[in-house]
Image: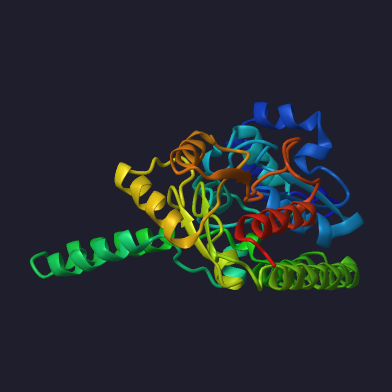
Length: 336
């Protein structure tokens, strides 16, 4: 929707100059990819945000994602071309805390509408107890420090605690619906000419997410066990919503390696809680999950954190993959 942008402000000119003419000319050959369209141009950080933007924006939005299909979103680095893409967009939709490079790039742009999904619902800590202990130690040490040093430490701890909060809100249909409602309102405000359609599309999406929530609630109500093992701690919100217990081989970081003690602990827990399956995912290595499963004589299966859709995904969109996740959980937990 760059009709507005034909009268380019001095600020935009300055920003474009700072990005470099080379970056802009490289983008100009692909208008759909850079946001130079007559639609409401939205740059989304990764798949769950892009899916929301597409569903809510409908025919009025041109949505592009900073994270390519199959790319691990946690590792994303922003290119010069993508920075130019952000500057040209009408809105940026991202999830603060998941992709630090995106957070930094969005904060540095002059884009008017910045939608942080993390601010549209409540984030919780599903794997950050380590940070809490560090914070307590820091407060004890503050007594021996100057006031300025104390403030610096407090700031550092608050950043650590924020980082420890679980960003995987899209895997809980209820929280995802809350985010959808916030995104819809932001779209209505940013593009009032199409507000009625955004409102209608948002309502339809929220209703569909309510249906998905009902499927999970009913499908996981009666199971032999409530414990499941995952590659990394992406399913904390989902587990909490439906009365399950997630035990992650790694923490919130999918690339971190578990200690030998953690592996032994999981092997013992598998026997105690009747765990049958170790879940792994499509975008990161399954080596650790399969090793644990082999040693503990467990099965393996995919539980997709839906950070991207690829040809390996069990479905073509969010809803199809979530339904596949439900079936995988039902089989692993012994649903009755």
